[in-house]
Image 1 (cartoon, rainbow, N blue to C red):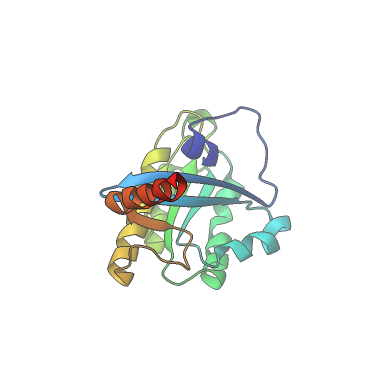
Image 2 (image 1 turned 90 degrees about the vertical axis):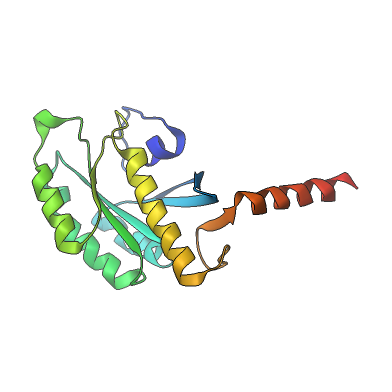
Length: 185
């Protein structure tokens, strides 16, 4: 999902995330340009000590399971418990079932994913990184939720302690103009 969202690419050469993968993407939500720092942490037990440290300071967490792998779905509650332990109480969360394009190998029904998301009161999407189904929609949804919370809670445009930087287009243009002026002389 990370590569599909950040670079609009997909590769059939499957690889497990080893510890953590990282991408950035700047998106526009309303009048705000939002620079996202997206960390893909592995769900495997052997990387647990590494990945738990990334929960601290996170503003949004997308919990992804594979709809063709029952075991990954059964791990969701464990991952949520880790998030509860290490992340901020106010972190935005979302549940995503990936590989929605592989219906013939489905082991987890849409209804099961939806029910679990309702139990935790998380937004829910089924996505396909391969065919790009709902990937943009899921990331946009959580980004809007984070942005709305940041604006509402802090009333600040830029928060130094966060991984997300919020600026209006006008502020960004002023900043770019100042950089140009600084380079000029």
